[in-house]
Image (cartoon, rainbow, N blue to C red; front, side, top):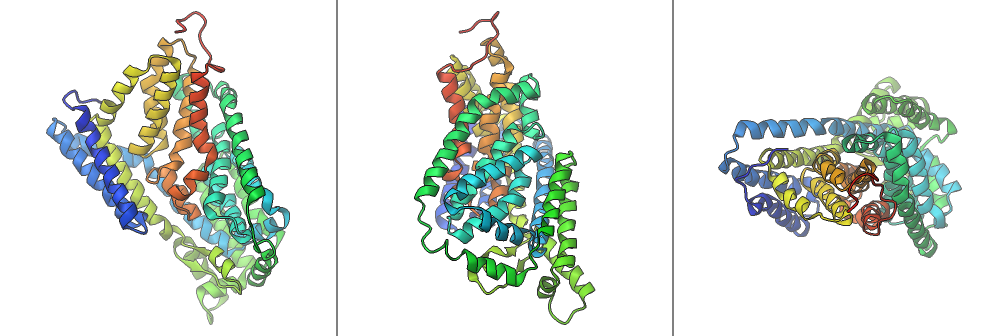
Length: 481
């Protein structure tokens, strides 16, 4: 990453301070900041950054190239986001998600629901290597179950995200789990084994917290209303165990390492096919009465993939569960990601990010300070560059030599990158991860943030282990100061 020697620290910080001011104002002045206010804030902050880097000698052509490059790096995420919207729509009209809610309400005790949500999402995410796919499939169903039994959506979302990111963090199939050791210079399985030292305590604390919340949660009369919810679902859908073939096939092809884009497209199309086979009445409701089944099937599946679908039952609670927005519902999030990438591209092109992080590296004298600086830098890049991959790659390159000079083995760096870069990305509203999961779950990032315990605890645990010098691996023949 370049650095312009003519740029002062204040100039480098100015676009970020300006952005923070605009985002803070948006929270108080707009009900839905994702609807455009935050996007404009990012573009205005990018414009200010562009003025600063241009004033310090950076050409517009070079700045534009960096913007295009950063947008290009986020393009796979945006395409995945569109397909997740499509998948959510067809899985709804096919009865897949309603069936998950229906059967889930039979087997899940409300008081252990949050722990169950964490564990189920963790297992699926380990198997698939993808927190995004886990949240978009199992996560949506669990959110519906939580809503039906009276659990606050933000708490449920926190449990889903905690479990999904635990699996994403330790799965050998995860892209970030492969990226972190590659940046640090260690092998994959050394990295995964070493992460268990901080990951197991973080997850244990997370499960204890959710157990306490679940035991003390006041469900009121919501537990007795589950039969009413189930009856409303059964009246509107043909509920059958055969519907679980759709998620089973999707999870299988993901485990077999099919790339996410074709896998999600197959999952979406399977949902549409099962809708035609099992849910003829739903098909007619979506397409409109008086249309032949062939035409209605085409209209309903297409509508579910690209647009709004609102299914009506005899229960208002269930009606709230059975609405999707398809690909169209993801467009605000894609707009946000594009705006964030423009801001990140400008900040990177002018070397503003490097100018800010350079003093941090100079202050990292001890092992604890070095790890703390790495955690802070990863969070900084998640906030400014708005992409979890950048938050792993750039700090990994920046701190690799510093860790070597301290005699620290590369897995110490790779674990720190994963504990902070991967884990905190979903806590930033305009980061690709935070924006995506907020849109998928329909819960604002700042609403679920206080309950994403695993994601909050992980970077703190990494710092704690470093400060207390617990399980810090060193090269014996190097300087251990």
